[in-house]
Amino acid sequence: MSRDFVGSWVSTPTTLSKVLLGFLAFVVLATAIIIRPSKTLSDFDQSFYLTIAYDLEHHGVFSNGVFDNVDSSREAPPPGMFFVPGYPLVVLAAMKLNARFDTAVECTVNAINQQKEATGCQAYERPVRIIHAALLALGVVAVAFAGSVIFGSTRVFWIAGALATAALATEAEIFSFVMTESLTFSLYSVTMLFAALAWKRSNIIWWGLTGLLLGLLCLTRPSFVVLIPGVLLLIAAGSRLLDAKTRPSAWKSAAVFVTVVALTIGPWILRNHFSVGKWGLTEEYGSAVLIERFAYNDMTPMEFFTAFPYCTPGLGDLLFDQVYGRDSMHRFMYHTRDSFFHVGRGRRDMLVSEHGRLDPLIGDIVREEMRTNWWRHLLVSIPLAWCGMWAGWIVSLILIPLFAYASVRTIQKREPVLLLYAAPAIMMLGLHGAVANHYTRYNLILIGPTAIAAAWMISAWLQQARSRWLARAPG
Image (cartoon, rainbow, N blue to C red):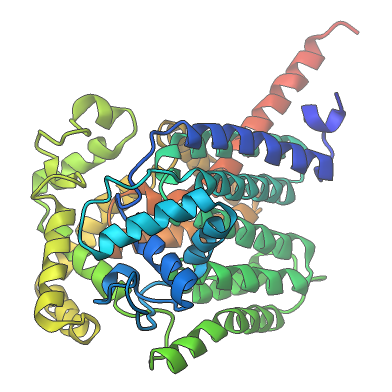
């Protein structure tokens, strides 16, 4: 067994180490995901992406899927821009690669178009589950490599990789759905790996690659567009906090980053202008999410305070009914009739039924909500962010406290790269608390920085233990 595998002091993991970690992560994650029970392909939000992929395959049109009024099993739908293209293209690739999955998708979409239950369609999504495992394994390697780049330790590489894999395995249920989380985690992890390389290796090319991957991330989940100004601020902060003797200027780094982001998302924006007649990444999506979020502002004081133990992994499972929602926290459940989610979704559907579109209304809706409930909105965002930060479930009980401790240590040591690396995920946590809901699926990107921070602490403790053992050893 090589010294690199067992955790030597070599600062850069070998290519073999990266391949081995990726393989091991893939095996663990593929097993965790594949053993999950099969779901009807119309369950949850899967139909959003399946219908768009179907329309791409059969009509060559990127549509709004379930959000248009056309039966695409009979006629071509109009172009749409409610969603961005990243994940539907992954689903389309799986359909092209596997005829059985393609048949299951076609049956499901036909049932959706005919407003029937898809129970007669085969629940087969294994090709997508395998793709998800591969994407997540790539993300694990990116996280582990970023850890070794930040702290110059192969031991951190292996520990971070193991922790990230374990945390993702606990979230296998969400990865078993045909939904965007695996692609989001993978793209984000690679994006921040390039940012870490840019901060540590002083090569402007890495900022260009960071811009490319962030652009692709925005084309998978448009909310990440807020990280464009966020990363620009971090570039400026890095130029002040890090040794600038050999690194390119912040202005040059920022210019390269922004240019590549614009070149990456620009074609989609142009496509929307010429095909749909509107500039932008998406339409209606942000308005719909925000209207659903406002329902949480009705939270009672008891629900506000109880949310903290309710959402704490392990503790919440012991104290509350998180399966059927038959207790005081039933409104936090997805499926209960009077849940925050269903109240918000009901208001959204009512507005769409009455007015057709939400974007022309959202300005007045936001102004009215902020005029009367701005303080409630800010307060409610706190427990929602608390609930959303426990990505990795029970593993996060180790990762989150160690991340907090590691953050203090990096400030004391004046080595800020870990905090620069973690900042975008923390920004997104705050954003999701303010405009989304309490589910951890939106904050899986926290697993990267928390796993690296925990790995650094564990590595340091192992090093200290080894040093004490050597000091006590005879001779």
